Length: 160
Image 1: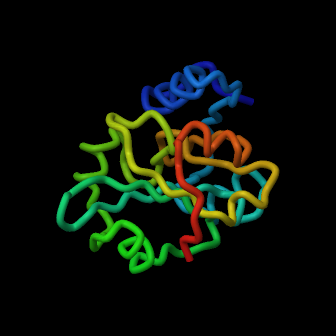
Image 2 (image 1 turned 135 degrees about the vertical axis):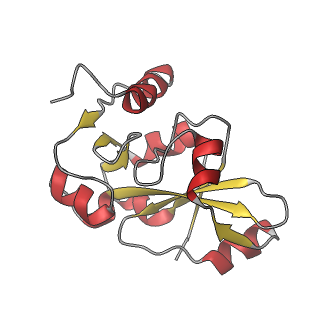
C-alpha cells in the first residue's frame, strides 16, 4: 500500500509520474531497495524486473547519461561509449546529486533536475511489469516497459 506521507524525494517522483498521466503508486518500504537484489526481495519479483537507474557521464562533454538496466545485467561501458562516440565513466555521487537531484541508491528514471539522455536495457522489455527506484533507498514503483520508455524518452538498446 502506498504511503500517504511520502518523503520529499519520493513525492517528487510521484508528482512526475502523475504529470505523465500514470497512476503508478510510489511505495516507501521498511526494507532497503538500494540494490537490485534487495529491491527484488522487498517487492517479491525477479532481479531482472528491477530497473537499475545508473548515471554515467561523457568524459569529454561531462554530459549526464542515464542507463536504465535490468537488475540482472551489467552495463557494457565500452559499447555505450562507441554508441555515443565519446568515452563514458560512472558518475560520482556529487555529480549524480547535482544533475538529477537524487542520491545514488534511489535514482528514479524520472523527476530529474534536467533532461538526461537515456538508454533502456532491451532485456527490460521482456517483462509485463518492472519496478523502479522512486527517489530514496526505500521507495519503488511498478510500471510497464512501455510506460518506462514513454516517461524517459529512452532509446532501447543492448547494454550488456
